[in-house]
Image (cartoon, rainbow, N blue to C red; front, side, top):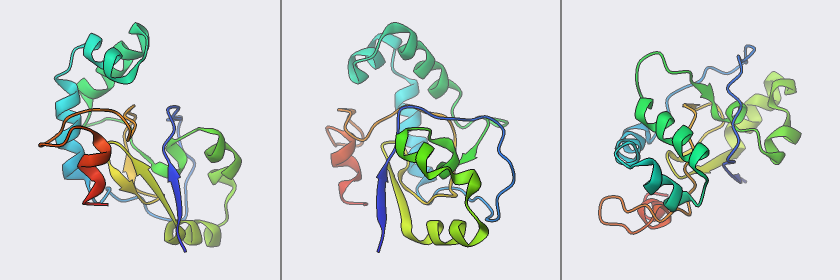
Length: 150
């Protein structure tokens, strides 16, 4: 059985204490680069319109994607990087080694940028929900773009 989670808008990239499972690059990292590059070309106003967000959050999002993928950018395992309600209650830092192993085998996280993530896939801070109407490679939105792959 797999538990499928959705990403959250809020992320926590404070320093991580050690985990018992080695983090890895996401399986669809190359595809994420394509999407991130497309978002990086958008203006702050285009991002505000796409995401229905204010100017400050749009400017922060633009800054995130402009620097996405550059060497030295902070990365964190997905399970520890998202800080929405479910992730707070899961409290990943308190999980035992056995619970980390179980979680890595039975939890997946849907992401507009990365497609699907395993809990210990390394991610950078970003804001991009699956439901956004971002046209990528012939698709009209991210859900349509990822549908066949996922």
